[in-house]
Image (cartoon, rainbow, N blue to C red; front, side, top):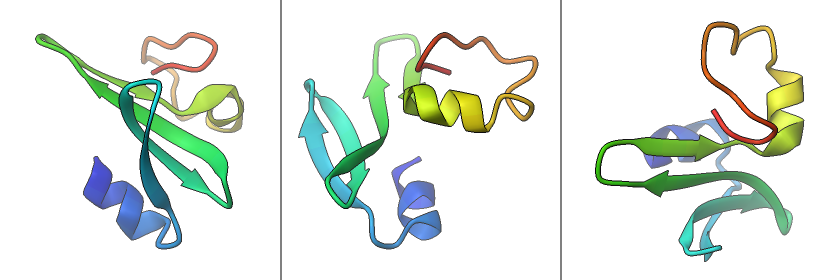
Length: 66
């Protein structure tokens, strides 16, 4: 996931925020990724959920999580 994010958004900066991998552009959060024992969570923030609502049809989402 990190390689894909870096490929698609070359100017992205990787940081740790809220204890998980975070990627930001221009100081603003883009996405967060957290790994757990049985799953990985992808947090595109609420703006990402809104922007890609149609593409996310069929996936379980919440306000800022896929």
